[in-house]
Image (cartoon, rainbow, N blue to C red; front, top):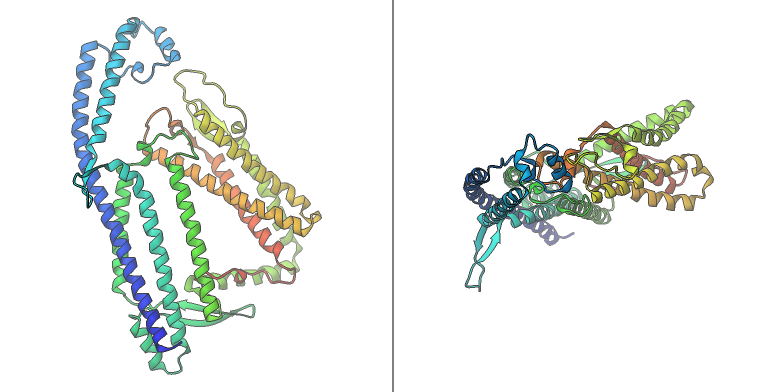
Length: 494
């Protein structure tokens, strides 16, 4: 390349640095603005709560009915029947008209109080070319904020990859220079960002390792400072305005948390594909695959272990038998874990196989069961996971008798199915964690009463192991038998 092209890459590197800092600054400003809005709404809502509590005490004195009574929370026929059997301790239950009027007035106060709380978070936003300001709820902005911050941080990661790609190109140009002073001039013109490229060989393959210089960059300090401030506000917002508190969990696949989870998964997939694309472009430009310092260390460790394992396995047949036994025992252990306790609820301990059966009716009006939609979703997901495990167990016995072309197609389908099961398990774990620390909202959040036990965690861990084994089998089935199977065969990601 010419000197003009070197200057162009240095300019692109500086632009990427400025863009990254600008995106982080925008994220910090948006986070601070949302935090300020919610703080003002919380203060106004606290005053409204105090007035509401005083009005409830007046209502209690008016009707002579304690607010802690069960009729405050439900009017189901089963609960009213239960209360009629305990009229000795609850004498006011005999007057049904009185209870009905009490509940009606209590409900109206609750609706009005909730409307006042929603209005406390309204903010005025002036837009150009509009005379009147627009009223926007801070709670709605809090719902949109996670998607916005994930998008901005994803864009920041992509800009960082571009910055690194231009630094690698400049390092390669400096490496190709015959004159040392000219090579250092390229580094200086790029604000000392380019590192060094060193060559190493793995299985007769030539690689370049990119090492960044261990020096202090002002923009790097600013980047970490902005990220620390953003994370501080994000954790505060999550603690004070948990999405579970603002949204009922009537489903594990289509509610707010599920949409946020799948959006995060989509962004991670797009980032991974972008990362791979940048790596491929750099390899085509330089003519050699490039990896970073960490990946180089993993390559050396993996190749050393593989060489050691191959030398030992060629002399000791029992290592191969242990590997075959491990591939057989993992699916058997996963199916056996269905007999272990999976969930502890008010109605008792639920074992894994119980989710494959219809849900039992509630024995008491006060006992909590899972919502029918949530139970159906869990049932379908577990059936798919059991099918995935059972297929792997059958495949351990029949894979040698299947043609390689068909085996590859089947493994590809089951590879993506394994990834889907892991992602569904992550979505369910996110719901359980958020409900555990988010608090109780209403009867629609029946998962809050369910505490996962060790059987559930064992099954999820074994499904993850099986998905890794399927991916490993698929990669090795595609390779010819004479091709060495080391970690260095993977596509480089710098």
